[in-house]
Length: 238
Image: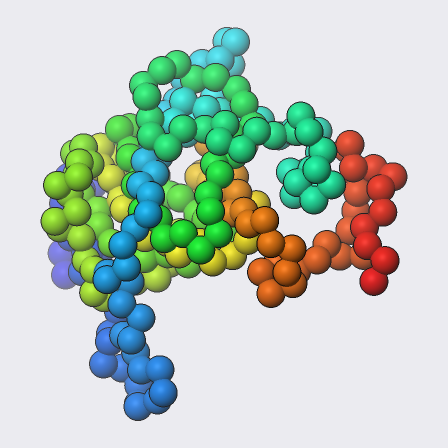
């Protein structure tokens, strides 16, 4: 095939959308290929995440929904386990961009365990973005140029999208994913550009449940390193 143009993104965008899951592959089995119909599940929440770049206190920073991430003095999962206040605030980043200036914060997006959510990555910049979500595979259901709207769902692939943990967002474009939040924990959602990640283009997705059942989440390891405000505490007896 001819090489894709370096300025126009249509060729690459169409190629990315053409990659599908083969639902007829392999032999018969109790749970055949394609028996999980993600497109028939109603989403319970839509989260729109927009990347941006700018200056904060005279220094270069990158942000998601105007929040540029800063690391706290204590690992957030330890703070949650020991119920240490003042380390992070659940919901410290909004569900959609509001267009304000960039500011520094420890951005944590709160989400319910076993929810089925739609996340839309919006890229208004002139470079390709790459996003990675720890702890999950998600279905890339749509991507296109321009601004995402509710009408964009009409073009979603709700049948044979590819399950991935990293996805691209083309310049001046958007990418939409569906993800089942079936893994309790504090999960990093970040830019795969290390400079942007280091300078704030990341956040944590806190998938939370009140349950303390080992069915939902493994206990803290006995040899977990405790630092920051969690230093000196004990993990668990068994």
